[in-house]
Amino acid sequence: MSYNDYRPRGFSILPEVVKNLLIINGLFFLITIVIGNRFNIDLNQLLGLHYPKADSFKPYQIITYMFMHGGFWHIAMNMFALWMFGTSIENYWGGKRFLIYYLITGLGAAFIHYLVVYFTQIAPAVSEINALNTMGQISNADEYLKVFYNSIPPVVGASGAIYGLLLAFGMLFPEQIIYLYFAIPIKAKYFVILFGLFELFTGIKNSSSDNVAHFAHLGGMLFGFILIKYWRKKGHGH
Image (tube, rainbow, N blue to C red):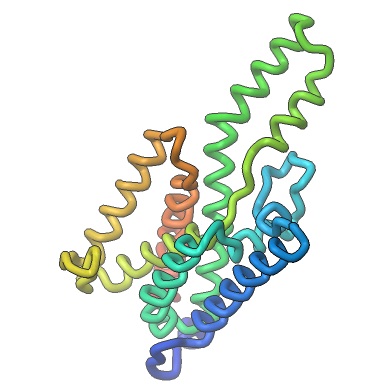
């Protein structure tokens, strides 16, 4: 398949894939509210991405988690960024390549998030529980581990893919001016670096009051960088 197969046919202010992603995310958000209020069912728990060893984990969650959001501002900011950055990228790449990129960065975000969670939370907890079991202070390590796996909150939101789009915008249009807080002009390449460093700092800081999956954001950017570099090497992108 040649790169030309992905090229768009002109410019659109609301290209097809971006439009459909906005619609799907909006519908999922509205349905979550309706189902929650009417039947007291939390769709974020059902469709958010749980740790693979948790009882609530289902394979389809690796896709559905990207369309779930924790509140109005969560989805509003993500959808604004999807439109703001995604429109230029889809017009540049075409819908097929854009969708592939969006989904892969979303999957990459989840992978990096749980990789970090594993090394910072899960591995130490498993080691401690096994040690207590060996010393005879607990009788059933597997039950304790199951409770621990089930206590890990699910990941929800398109943020990982959105940060992947932010990375792509910075690489495709590095000199483009973005207005930070709608007032401060900054080139896209510096905007991306600034946001990446902020996410790294806040992720390492790991404040107890912070429930944002910062390493998921970085994972989206990392997988986006790798994918763009791969496409460029193959001659499929600019």
